[in-house]
Length: 325
Ligand code: MLT
Image 1 (tube, rainbow, N blue to C red):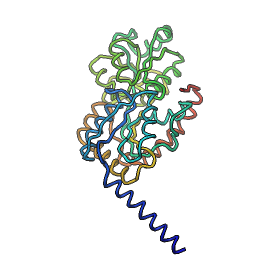
Image 2 (image 1 turned 180 degrees about the horizontal axis):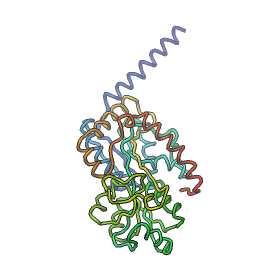
Image 3 (image 1 turned 90 degrees about the vertical axis):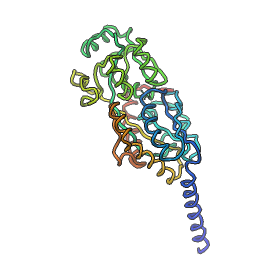
Image 4 (image 1 turned 30 degrees about the vertical axis):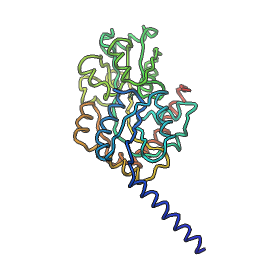
């Protein structure tokens, strides 16, 4: 009995020492921040703004790596396989929870693969088109796509991307199936929309605000309940008669499951510093987004959101019957 107690105490002391050492040693070199979509796109923009402050806090470079492909699941798989020491982290949006159902086969188990650092932002979406697309307004657009559905193309960043979900919802609500064109992110999709290679794109304000304000693309309607303060002239789809066209994007920061709590705490403190940084707040506001609250920017806040969103999207995706391989 005494021996067992001593052994348990020794084991506890060992675990605490390992955790302490891990936290003291962390970061032991540059931290890799995986971003599942292309450089210059909305997720990349958020990641780089956050990384800029996190590296000052952590005292080591935070290197953003655009690990694109398979609607973001490639980057999630990379994280799941990484050593759980905090040196590799992932900044992903809500697609990490929709792909848990959307993909028939994943290289990781979405229920157990990740540890949680905290939520980052929430970002609104809107529907834009190439600048010279014929329909003058949203009402004309709805009529036009019904008459020309075989001709109209809709860009997205692949199954699992929020542009894919937003476009899918638009097609469901209008009852019109358009030709979808997948990209490695909405950064390149936006470039092609501006260039006139594709007609329509549903994007986040973090990618679309600049091109809308400089009239490089046409904005038809927002996928939000209220108008977006940074784009006050763009009406909501509901105002224009299309109810239910609402997609709210949120971002989170993840580590591999098994990452020691003290390492997660250090990452979380750096994340919070980034979210409180005046320059981050200013740039986020310019891009139509804002940092989440302190309560949401916690491991518990993200964990609760992550599992609730997997449960929320599962029946919707199953009902739509649209799966990816
Ligand atoms: C991106 O960063 O390219 C986007 O977040 C992709 C998307 O989900 O639509």
